[in-house]
Image (cartoon, rainbow, N blue to C red; front, side, top):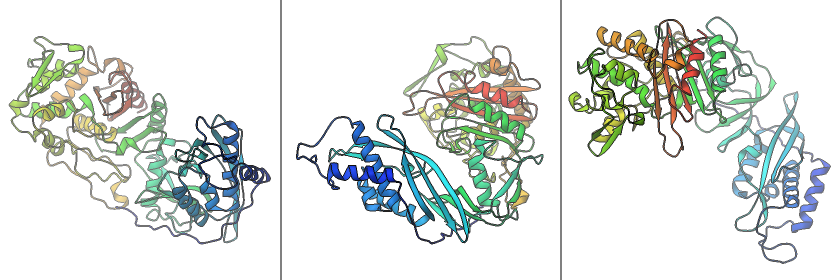
Length: 542
């Protein structure tokens, strides 16, 4: 489903001019060290240790910048703590970009961090475009030499560069696109920052199909199939128009919602069609975790587990289901939050209060280690190779036994989901049938959408919706978050521990009329506390 477009590198010569301040600083470094890498100081005393001094920070930074601007790759790399990697990256920078008159000017240090500004002119085939950007570097003491060194990473060359990426001037990349929402409103990364990775992928896949033609651009390229990111346009091509299923109003609400918490993601889907109305993330790395993340979803998985138990006739919404404070399954004891129990409560109430033990006690009655995975796949479409129009992970519920099987029933262990998957689960519960999520219509490229082998039986679908409605009202765990949401509404909360993260993820899934949404937040608290308000604000934008 990828466009197959290849990046063509336009060859050229790298010419630089260094600012006087850089040369002076480099001469200062020569005077201090003699221009060599040594394990002793210039006066022959023992190798230095301890914190890097302000003088060392300034001299090292300015020396590196002067050598870089001069085009002396080996000399610049010698100022770093990883000369081999630095020289490779600097060489790629020189051969991949068409810059002239380059200057790299250091700013005022903050401790051992030095901001700097690069200015140059990028030229190709008669086009000349000024290019200025800011970056920063840090100075550390070399472990083996004791000398001050630039702490190397590709981001030193440009703040948007990551290791394994490079800058290239290309005239045969994917044509630019004008992405529009379902009503024709333009969607830009400047207005909707979370859409940047989505728009990059749409351009890569559909720029040509949408009738666009390539321009000449300076881009960030990555290893593998990741989409290029444009840093500078030398000559505009003709953009192709790509109509998406997104809704500008819902997207704006999603963008605002994720700003409340770092490392948060939210997705909204129309249950009756599977059309994605919004996708937003708040991440420093710009990764589309909402579509590509893989983490345990906590008790939001109980939507799937409840459907399984209802279909097998092991429970009914209005029948009593045991909910003791804890239950032991093989070698692990599972507890409810704060050890609560429900005496004589219905399964609907156990669902609404998120009683773990009411679900785990029924595993042996299911008598099929693969049953939960089958339910997830056959009814909710999890793991069916979704073709949304952009890269996505469609979830995983592998077959497990004993303690791991029990953990899966409450969304822990080896279950892997993201906000897109859980939003789809909520949408399937609302519609009673799985509709594969899409960001662009399948008609654009005639791709085949995934279809679930079967739909939920009518009784299960009705009871499941009623239990989600109970969760969003009264004493349900989602009631507080959903209090301000009108219409036909239902919800499910969840929290899940993640290895080495230090705190649980907060999950929330809900529907209101014909819009379903799910959010995951790396934040302390229950699902209704952190993720719940994000979902509610998105649903209110419908």
